[in-house]
Amino acid sequence: MATETLACTPSEMMAALASRELKDGEVVFVGIGLPNLACNLARATHAPNLVLIYESGAVGAVPERLPVSIGDPALVTGSLMVAPMTDIFQYFLQNGRIQVGFLGGAQLDRWGNINTTVVGPYDKPKVRLPGSGGASEIAAHAKRMLVIMKLGKRAFPAEVDFVTSLGMRYRGTHRRDLGMPGSGPVKVVTDRCVLEPNAEGELEVAALYPGQTLESCQAEVGWPLKVRPSLGSVAGPTAEELRLLREVLDPKKLFLKG
Amino acid sequence: MSKVVSMKEAVASFVSDGDTVVIEGFTHLICFAAAHEIIRQKKRGLTLARLTPDLVYDQLLAAGCAKKLVFSWAGNPGVGSLHAFRRAVEGGGAPLETEEYSHFGMVARLQAGASGLPFAALRNYAGTDLPRVNPRIKTVTCPYTGEVLATVPALNPDVTIVHAQRADQNGNTQIWGLLGVQKEAAFASKKVIVVVEELVSEKVIRADPNRTVIPAPIVSAVVVEPFGAHPSFAQGYYDRDNDFYIAWEPISRDPAALQKYLEEQVCGVSDRAGYLRKNPGLTERLRAKPMVCEGVNYGY
Image (tube, rainbow over all chains, first blue to last red; front, side, top):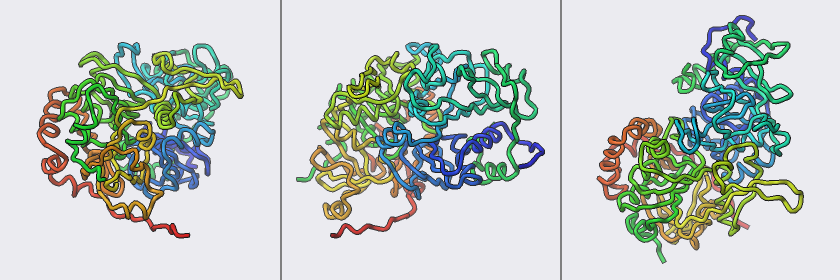
């Protein structure tokens, strides 16, 4: 791994860091956008046997083009299996066959709860977002749940307006007492730092990216950030990771915008 | 006896004002042709149910066909918002009743409906706000383990419309590629309209029975409308028109542009063939490349 820090965008950093969280041979439930790039980057580097499952039903997908939607026909061509959605949600996800799930959202709070439903009150929303899709059940069941989201005051409030997907704690109750078998968010990969839950389930700073400070992160987060006693260090993308992201995986910069 | 009819006849005969209508297809095989005919026939007061309302229900909402939307993800996939839907919910358009689940919840509802059961149980929703805003999401205690599970009510549509690659004249319907919840939606429904790219002989169906997803006995009508899923796609026939989905963003954002679109592209044509004539070059641009699989031996 390169010791020098190569110039890269926040999106490239996030995709590269997320890809390194995936182990070869794991079964991962993939979303569109940066999670998809992270998974395909992992497949092209250290995890050639990663099994990509898309909620649309493609299992072991090997998309030859960047899928714009979760149901792109390129996910089907050459895949290992096309399962009906009943199988995807019941046999794969609910039955604990998914090792890693990726989520993002409009809002994420102190406890890792994610909102993709509404900004403002449900009955009179300021902004109506798309809703759960498969996110609620991915958060319930993924053995290891990863989040990719850029920091921002509105995106990281102390409390989300609506809990679409359960984090580590809901209205004071820890998720282990709620009967949902998945891990909850074990890592939140942002554009400035990595957050991880502490024993109480509160997200705290676990690692800072080169050039970032606690102050620069705190300015973008709506609760007083706690910090791990020993902060981890983060290596930026390697030249090979950047080449794959820029030239092979997203040459038109559909998802590597900023 | 052949069930083949025109789209006009199928919608006139099997879709009534006030019905619960499901046009399924998860990104793949979404029957825009049927939705456009529903708009042309000015159906009113429909309850529209679908996992992803997609552009197809955004258009039906904008045309004033629906009183209620039942869904689990209401966005423009890979692009952003469904603006007719947002205007209705955020208070800038005609009011719309909504009933919201997650994908798994909707899948389970259709599966319960297809199985003749009143509800489905699933391990979900604890620690989320979905049951708080949807009182139809309840819980049940498992009589064997004591575990508390979430429940969702069966969904039994009045009519389900499924687009497929091919069927015979009786309605034996074969689908490949992404299967979504079409089979569950069809078996849950009182009536089923199948719309296909190609009408084939029963012999073709019998040669590959594992590919049949919907059998003739549950099918009310068969409609043949090639490219009837555009801008959605049909694996092996044509690609998803991603450019159209991107172009929909500014159209649906502007109510006047949206009404103009409906006037020209929906009410301005009489069927899918007319739509294709109005959009020259579309079929050539999206036609699928051949990638044919090897057949299997069904002998014994």
